[in-house]
Image (cartoon, rainbow, N blue to C red; front, top):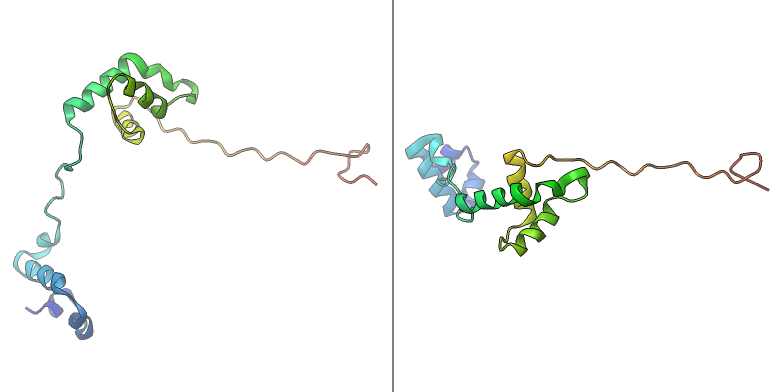
Length: 130
């Protein structure tokens, strides 16, 4: 089976295709659609946090900093600053994602700023005054 037939390419596109395309077509011919799936799919990232360390940080949050999110005044960003003092260095978005997965934090959408009416200027309550 040629690369052009396997991928449904035109002859000119197959002529321009590099060796990557031929390698993919070869694997598709040997393994079928399963061969096109990336080999690392479903595996944990190499940059993922250790599960024990993650649990320590979440426990510390629950013990000392769970009240910092009241009324939307403080959130994961402020908590990260406090956790750095305790020796835990974690990015605020990472902490926010962990807290949402654990059910300790809820996403809150900010309201749009209210657009008030233009103030009235005249004595007769009109916008224009001569």
